[in-house]
Image 1 (tube, helix red, strand yellow):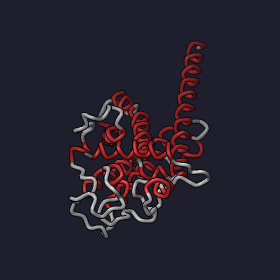
Image 2 (tube, rainbow, N blue to C red; image 1 turned 90 degrees about the vertical axis):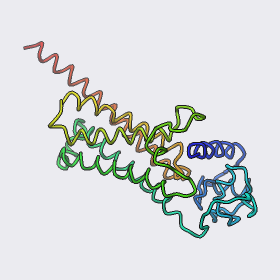
Image 3 (cartoon, helix red, strand yellow; image 1 turned 30 degrees about the vertical axis):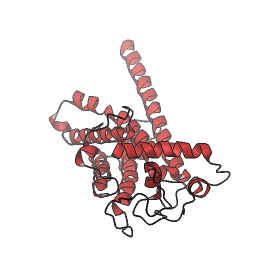
Image 4 (cartoon, rainbow, N blue to C red; image 1 turned 90 degrees about the horizontal axis):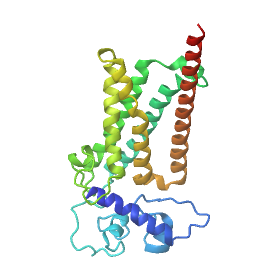
Length: 274
């Protein structure tokens, strides 16, 4: 149910973009119902300032995905037991915690890369310590956990524990590139890397290094997960910041690899000259 809803939103958005003329208008979703303002004005005739135009208990975006009318209070005939006036705090907390988790994950990876990058080391070294690095990683895991578990309390989505903990659970109809599953896998990678960092002195350094090569993979999974199904990515400013920060971190990572290779070559030449 969850993944079908997520991908239905993605398909609905693709269909909207094919039929819409945004002109110089920003692509925003003012009422956060899953439909952009211009889609509500040009296609659906709904109120872009109201999350539920017909006040039947279902968000306009949910009705569009399900094939019911967001303008007819009698459609659908059978409604979930929801309080229309109730603020969807779980939905807002889930989205906000996802953004916060991404910020702390970005800082965690940046600190790890910058301390080994000669261009950034002098800036980062005064505030860097391994304990601080581990703490920021733990904070990122905490917010990722809040992000996932908050949706358990969203009556509209109907998440279950298996849906937020097991990648590809009950998703036979969805291809394996499912961004929801990528987000779940990224969470477990973050968990493994954080726990092993705290246990670093009690395990093989080689094993610890190998496990930390999961960092770039986890970050890629998070970027795909957030960009494809993140509701806030419809906001031009948020999506632009998200993509720019991701590209910047990828650039720093590539530069760090280049510096590492150069140092290895210089070290080998030095050893051979002795």
